[in-house]
Image (cartoon, rainbow, N blue to C red):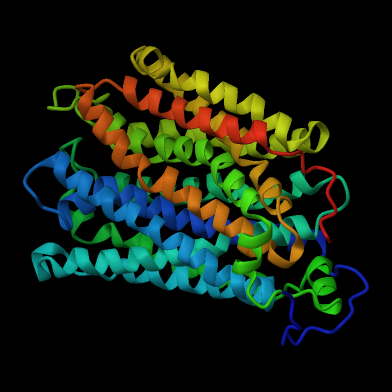
Amino acid sequence: MSAPTTSTLPATTAAPTNPRSRVVLASLIGTTIEFYDFYVYATAAVLVFPHLFFPTGNETTALLASFAVFGAAMVARPIGALVFGHFGDRRGRKATLVGALLTMGIATFLIGLLPTFAQVGWFAPLLLVVLRLAQGFALGGEWSGAALVATENAPAGKRAWYGTFPQVGAPLGFIIANGLFLAIALALPSTDPTRPSDAFLEWAWRIPFLFSAVMVIVGLWVRLRLVESDAFTKVVATKRVEKLPLAAVFKSNWRELILGTFIMLATYVLFYLMTTFTLGYGRAATDAPVPGLGYSYNSFILMMIVGVLFFGAFTLASGPWADRHGRRKTLIVVTLAIIGFGLLFVPLLGAGFFGVMVFLILGFSLMGMTFGPMGALLPELFPTSVRYTGSAFAYNMSSILGAAVAPFIAIWLWTLGGGSPFWVGVYLSVMAVLTLVALLLSRETRDIDIEA
């Protein structure tokens, strides 16, 4: 049931007044900060937190504990999606996006100030969990709001292209975060390739977390200059704002919620395997109890950055492709390719430097092709009055099924295989099959009216 909003927006708006440059910056910068914060935490979860927050005496156990905290944020994401989605559908996209960005930035900054286990005992990982949950809560509302800013302000026939702007934040955030970590590691080199230097562990790891404050200030400046989209102001003008968007979306769009969740599943699993598991596997010593590839952090992160350049390029390329051929057809083809890629883990990762580079380039290219169209597809599944809530909930429920457990399952399967990544690849292929089924059951959204 609909009820009038108490928004202070004017009842009518002639047309969207956000220029293209403002739309691009506002949708891009927030997700860049979001993924920067994610990558900073993910990198620290591999390099730092097992040593400073989970000193169990067993490297694998410490890494699993670190990834468990990493995954805990995914549980908070659907809660954030519901809260931010509610206000985004009732009060507007702008204020909600500002709130999500502030919450995320403050939580990330405070992680950089945390005491370690050696200083306060188990209180240290407890504080880390609390701040990680705050990050997840903020992430629950960030992506969908950015995607709506892009798609609701897009010209006709270019929604998927505009929807790639927030998606490009993922590779940009990776390059900024890992470039900063790499610069610190080069400035403070370690004599042990399996462990950062003492100076890195003592204080330098905090720099990337504290630096997020600078990025948040820039992001706030851009977002505070936004005006609401024509799609949302028309909902206000026609008194179609839902009093309880969550109840409305569950009542009328429950099928789209389920399909959207599973359509996003393969993307999430591939994303976290390529960025988090791969870093741990690449750095693990070849003679370790659970062997890996034996690369140093500096060498492997440079290899990953090369792959991420392909991630960014194919994310941008996927938008025009999805506008031309449709979101559903594009994603079906890409998902079939992901299923095949999962079966190539062993031959590629076992083929030396050349094989590892092919693995990284191919995996990140597929990541761009599957991630890019999601910026348009998920919002297009839902009507304007519940679009923020619906897209946010589907996106973040998928984060639990895919992202929260993917690093943990991957390490378990890696251990189960005695160091072979075979079962990790099979896991990816199985998740991609579930996504393929959801795509086959879904409808094409390219030609829907975004203001409906």
